[in-house]
Length: 417
Image 1 (spheres, rainbow, N blue to C red):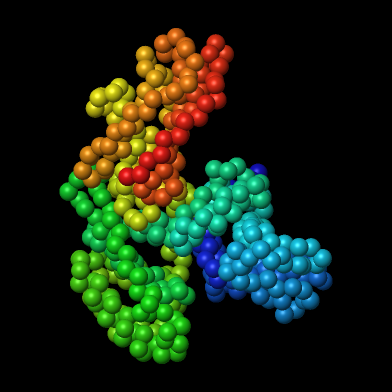
Image 2: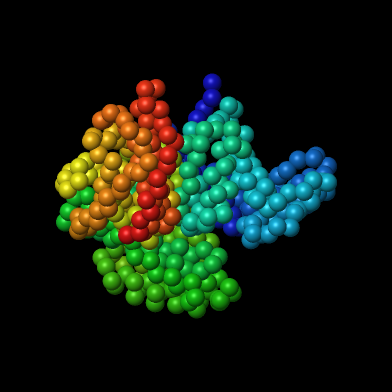
């Protein structure tokens, strides 16, 4: 009998991390390297052994490259835009091929540890939306041999929110600070909650400090890095009452914080962890009670849709029927409803501001439908987004069973809010 796993994956340019949901502990548990139990960071390199004629990934690839003859492939993220093929063992690969192979091998390296292990749900967290990476990962389900809905893609910010809001309530009863110090530099996020309305509103303020603090800038001068970071922390923490601080990223992996630790720990709890995003992705994979905060809060971030899209049942009618609700990432926001036209060839589309409840309305006439008796024309309405502010409502003629077959006509009403 197969054992199904909820898996969270943090996929960065240099390293990958994995976690799985431990049913006994009722929380995500990080996956260490097979050949090094001391680290959860799996390097994003591939190695093809010409001796054993097989591919290795991560820590195993790092080890095998020194003990076997073969070919090392790295810098896969950086070369995704390259059209130059990579030749390995008389076979040519694109970097897109190697990218998907690497991701699959990372996942397989975990599944192989357990007999009959399969994916129940896999959520892959990447630093931010990248159309090429999302396009490649959207086809991963075929390579893994699972249904499409078993794999989702999200961002570090979304994963961070999933992680934070699944910690004890006293850690986020006020604002929360998240410092992300990656190889590219320091980013700061402040998560605030407005409790004067239902659903409560979560807003995320973002400050990019990468030009001021980065690993390449300081080198071995961790003393100055500590001084500079403490000034930034002190400045930001004065702006709001912070319940807790979360630190993540390779920049925080060494013990260089002294002065800044004193600043951060004044009246608040501080947590340091490299696995916040992979565990947050794992919480998202499980869903259920762990997704409850998205029902309790309307989440406003730079990547989330901040309005609802729906229809009015009749022209001038105040009743709102939603197709999608806002508060989610635009690239993971989908919705579909079906309607039957009642003595009309018009649809009133409504865009509803979640804060002010102000509405923008557009009436769309469905041209070219054949003459049918009343209430025998069924339409589907779907919403898709191009970014957090714009997209389209797709209207399809479904006909009405065998008596009135569909014309297969499709209408597209674009919007920008």
